[in-house]
Length: 95
Image (tube, rainbow, N blue to C red; front, side, top):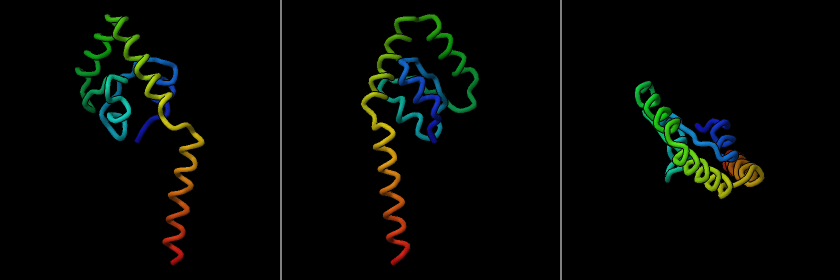
């Protein structure tokens, strides 16, 4: 539920505009990006136009996105979390 391209853009300090699906709204909350309704071409177009016209806002969103990404767990922590989930599932399954 979270495209890698969004995380990559955030790590580079780029502003992100995405649709409100999966885990995207949570990741972009708090000013780390803009979220629009799925299927709303009008909303997406309006957000793109607004950011294209406002370099200061693009910079602010990009900086916030980078800060959020840097504060997030890295790949090692995520891999350990996945391992723990699978280990626990296997333990329960083998009971």
